[in-house]
Length: 150
Image 1 (cartoon, rainbow, N blue to C red):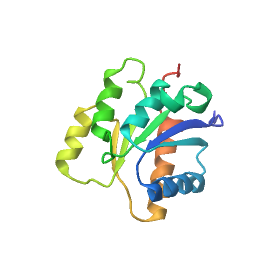
Image 2: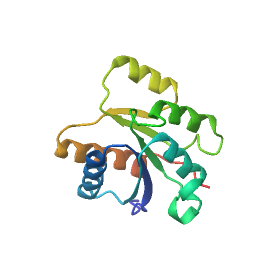
Image 3: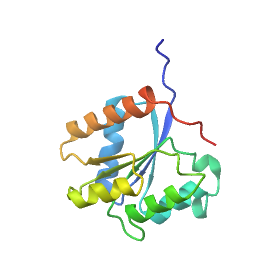
């Protein structure tokens, strides 16, 4: 039985305007039924998830089904944000995919230790990014069973 996948909220934390625009275009090109929201740093990510600051209205900050997390951001980096997400009983079940330009082997091991579900190096070509979005969408939204959001 092939059910039509429902739109899912994807929250991308990335401080680079170009990377956010490319991700938005790649998601559209990949035909993933997702509602993409953006935050620019780890503090804003946690405000969004905890409905603080400019995200107090739940309708403006729906619970994400997937977080795409850059590591190197100002104010609070991805490592710190991931540590806080995994320490919070209300947030720890949200899948977090680290999508970053960092390729250092030490980063990969440390990120999985912090609780990331996946680590992907950002592709430099747009078509490769579209491919990544297709795979993420197929895996996280069509293949695996995710817990119901609150």
